[in-house]
Length: 166
Figure 1 (cartoon, one colour):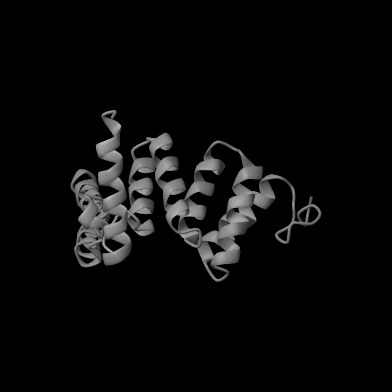
Figure 2: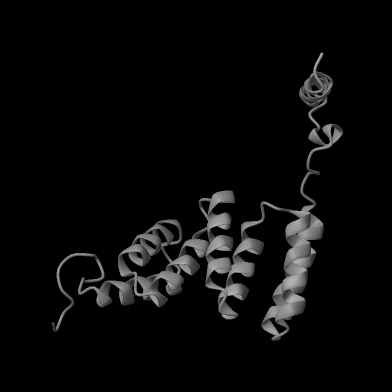
């Protein structure tokens, strides 16, 4: 018998326990999200971030993420912080992860579009902003950025034809 066989039996037993009990934790898997702890750490991080305490905010955001790895708001906040520090690759990774965990989180599409606008990738920015606008049609930031992106490529706000006055 090979060495992998006992591990495979143990893993199968674990999954059967999981199915019976509905608890992945019993298998040594990830703990369920602690949303209360995540929310408290996120609120603390947002306050610190707003007060200009970036490093402390990052620690609080990471604490929130440890408590709830699927919190799109925390991922987005880490992206904003990374972008402010000029770590655009890290910012993009955070925004994309936020979108993966919550495809309906409009703010992550918006923030990712802002990165695209900085690099003058207007086509990608417009696609992201259009998705954000579908998800949050009354968001003034999204609307203004979308209008600016359309203007940069000579399109009207509705996406058809040149801007007025051109």
